[in-house]
Image (cartoon, rainbow, N blue to C red; front, top):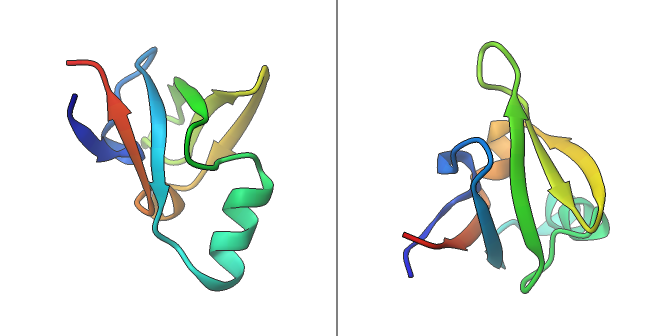
Length: 78
């Protein structure tokens, strides 16, 4: 299965987080939101200019800027 950046995912596409490649405060913030390896996510929508992206994680919806989404690698089904 291909591995892509979270930013590249399409609306309603589902995937499993493979890795979070951010360190420091940003990496900690991303992990505290529940975005850790092994977690299933689904893209729910994007703002009119494609930033931020809304995603479903563990039954809730959260938004990420594309600059943050670039640090998250996801395995998606082809």
